[in-house]
Image (tube, rainbow, N blue to C red; front, side):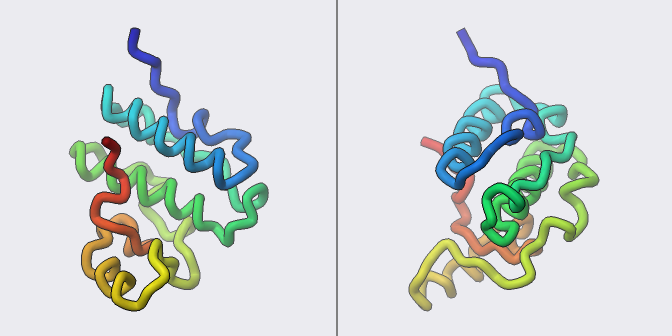
Length: 127
């Protein structure tokens, strides 16, 4: 039996810590890949920064993810993920060392770069 995918808005409602965010993101990506649908990314999730206090990183990550998945599957990018309301003020890198940061500057997908998130090219890949 295939698990039913929850829309992003529903999936991330009530997240209170970064560990739960990570689990939900991985589960969301798995379910989306089983049955890609615009409906899963169409509605804007609630802002998570008030609970996570991560300077908006999770919010920017959700917008980047929605935009990336939309472009990859030739869906329209949801309006909520189109603007820069979920962009970070300062760049955030998924690496600590200078050399790795330089690699991330080059390979980070555009949907992430425009929001000041610098991640690996395969950041949304799942085994």
